[in-house]
Image (cartoon, rainbow over all chains, first blue to last red; front, side, top):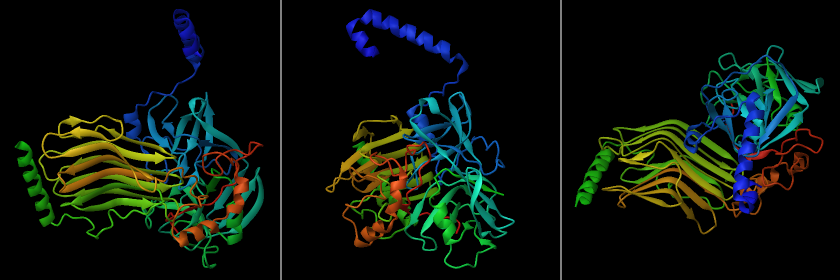
Length: 261
Length: 259
């Protein structure tokens, strides 16, 4: 629009641009714009995926916030993640996680910014994205999952109501399933490992295993070929669930909170 | 004249490296073997006197794949790289490496960079460098495809090297170094199949029969619940019409979770 008016009336166009700029800065005085990030800075930023490690990230304001339903967002283009409103860039959030579309849970919002949980190390990392300038899809996720490591149970909640509860297996004492507010990052139809047809990797990582197999120690939700795990702490950190539970959990949206206590 | 001298010096250094046994993974022939019709990526590859098979190297023949390596170091001052990563699948590929120092035994680093990356995504191909330097030449963050850098002495260097293969796939390599045909070194390389859609739903690629059959085994039935039909992105990337988050579509991939 500016270009068009410029073409017709160059002098007037320039005046309008100045006025518009002045008006914007007036309105924006209460809002915080993201700092400029050069291509070189972008190149240096780590990618926020399960293989990534982010430094300088804030931590989940409520790691014991419970199994909460809420808003999830999917970046249509790679998003820059910041340490705070108007703070330094700390990561890039790609559009895809292990082949699945990226969906991250929003844990707080302020002035057009959203704080989202990140799928990287260290556990409970969060970051701020500027929603106003982002091309992001947002949706309401009605589901949440509670994992109780003491009782060996996993409970699926829809709108806060229990819709399923199963006895599960967790990590052995030397490789415990980490506690905190994790979320489901992807839905994998596993092509190499045969213990579970579908694996739901979580945003959290093992605190005792830096790597596992060829992976970065990602904690997963999946089933197991026999029931040796039921009610036991004998996995390497993953949460093993009955096939029936897996079938239900595989239909739960990506970004759903898995609250591990 | 000086050029010849430099080359000779380079050979000496590289030979010394060979004698010292600083050769990584001397498996034969794997370096150039590329599955056609799949997305692929690697962070580093070297052939010639110093041989480094593509590391880490992934392709999407069995679904989305990703690998990383915290550090790759070959003494003495041959190579020192951190955070090598490669991922491929779902119609995209990316390779990156950080804190790069390539010495090839010469006193000061021949190549240094704080980050190097290459990526492709639905026909969009790009590469970029951060604080990269070859010899005394500072390299621009982004350059047009196939930009040659003239380095006095022994090297031919191509930045943002882009090659289209007979099957239509495109490879982008952020930095490709050639020492007069005796040593090749590629850093951050990504290959994408043209017009590749969501990896989980692609069925027309000329791949092995196992791949085709296992692809169909992916529960396609749930894609109806995935929302976002006609888009270019993967299934399930949009809210449902009622604003609810979509049920996911399982995507063929491999990830070693903590069992």
